[in-house]
Length: 151
Image 1 (cartoon, rainbow, N blue to C red):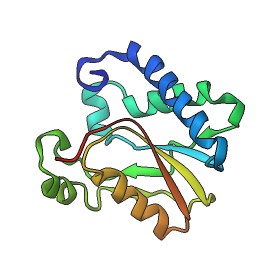
Image 2 (tube, rainbow, N blue to C red):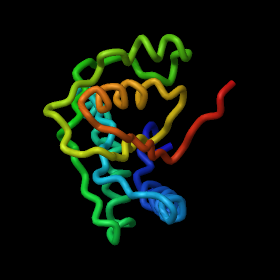
Image 3 (spheres, rainbow, N blue to C red):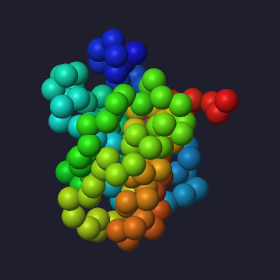
Image 4 (cartoon, rainbow, N blue to C red):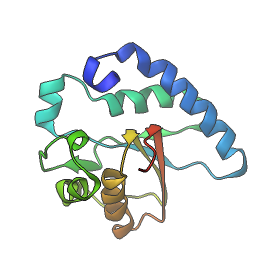
């Protein structure tokens, strides 16, 4: 809804719900050092007019302000403007997203939160996690407002 119907007013309540779950989860665990939103390609950003994942990440930052979490929206760059994932099956999604991202520099953190609006097959977050771990990040937590069930 947020992504395709421009229902930006839904971001704040969704971030609030996710923040509650995260506060609960991290009672017994270490918080990540930084939040990294999954980036849109600049062409898709121009088409849509907003980046729903960045907006979600910013709303989460406000909700989680006591945790001192910051956002780095420059580290990960989408370099390939691929077809939208929604119309593809799991195998095609993995091929579609392969090598679509790069890191602008070596990350300085060992534990990060990768924020995506929806995780369907996991192809996007897996690709970015692979890059981050290859660059020295030890732990990548995936934060998402929705996860589609496996078929």
